Image (cartoon, rainbow, N blue to C red; front, side, top):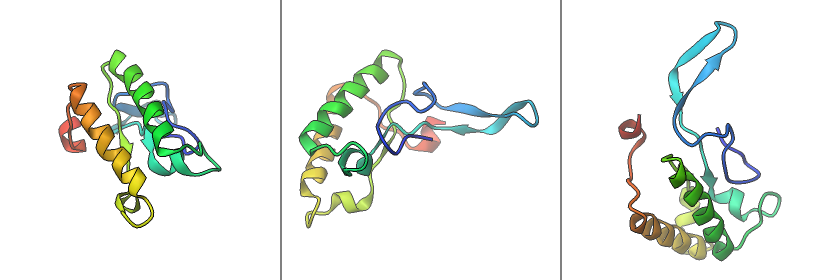
Length: 115
């Protein structure tokens, strides 16, 4: 779960959690991993409409909040954003972001490892 219109916390949480089944009055067995950042949310004019430079600032600000709560940042970066044809600046932003996350001592995990 995440917002398409902006980055951040859809359920006010940045760690995996069990969705609740109101019909059964109990949590579902599976875990939800909150989506914090999606590439097209940052770029598309109908959403945030940011430049890659401004997007990096916004992601860093969000990440600082996530770090405060020992949470997880979940990125959805589509393969088209790794293209050097039209998205080279976004590809470079992703590389810079990963380097910055490494500097922040963030751990990188697959969903299986996280869960």
